[in-house]
Length: 294
Image (cartoon, rainbow, N blue to C red; front, side, top):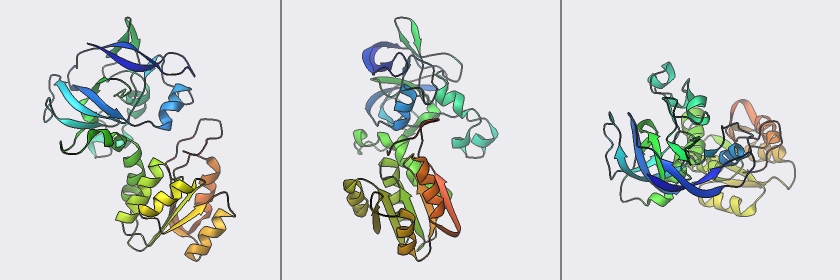
């Protein structure tokens, strides 16, 4: 089928809205009409080749939409289902089989290698193959994706609000709920209050953390974090961040999440911990260069 997509043809080029051809879904795949897509810094890292992805490519990895067609062998998903698209995984390696698909042994090839699991492309521009991204390429009107990428959602929830669930929201909340697993009443600091950091704040609130400190340089983000559960906020442009965290907590936090992508904040996150504290790094940085705040 013919449709339109935002294509990156060469390193650093702007996204070009152009006509592409989308092939039929193959075994284990589904065709999704994209309703909305979040935009993540990882997309820009791929555009600029800080994260190498074969070009030309259709990027985007926070898609939500409606299933239009299913390929052979697909079960429990049917046309008309509302879905969120997430990362791709093989489903058969030891990590996938143990419920840890996020650590799939084929993760890099399936999400950054530009091809579907069978090594072929579903997207083309004038017969030129286009790489996919995270197995979904949601910067298009239609996406062919593995059924393993697809998560069904209720039809009474606005699809245009759900795209970021596929990456940013689950990354921030998962770092807190699945990795740190804070005890009720414990303390936590989150560096970088973008979509990922705000999701971590909300998860810390759900986990009943007693002290939730949000750190950023944008006051509007810090104000929003208060609405979503932060008990304290720190503007990183004002004073010594680590000293202020230790002052608030009486010696340091139990947990820290670095979600900004700034390398120096990884140091701050570790230095802000008390004895036996644990830090999680989730903010992506440009390889070999200083990252900016997300």
